[in-house]
Length: 163
Image (cartoon, rainbow, N blue to C red; front, side, top):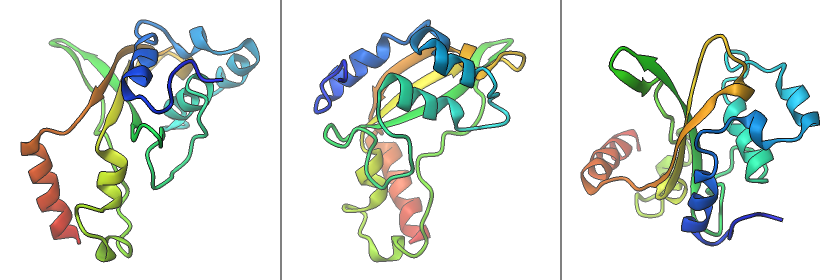
């Protein structure tokens, strides 16, 4: 049974915020921890996000056309941060969607799979450290995020070019 309301984005966000300052090791069982101990981020790039979905939010990881939290219309995205001399910075680009060049030609922007999946994101950022196992990465941020109208206009223009 979920510890959040699957229909309420704010409830999902509040549950996610309980992760801040914790690691996957802090939130999962010892049996799961033993199997995840063997997985490094460099070996399984999406492993952190998949483990988060499966063991914390209890949703089935996968590449579906709808958002991860379907009823709340919230897509979960996790991404690594790195420490720099100036503070924390994104370690890599955050991928919002994989383009299906056949399907995109049949879609309209307003009913696009991109908008359906990415209108409201739950972003979870964790601190990646090369010497640590993925299970020991510390979660630094967990927030709901919506694209600004300015950024959405840029994304729409790019989407239309691709289409």
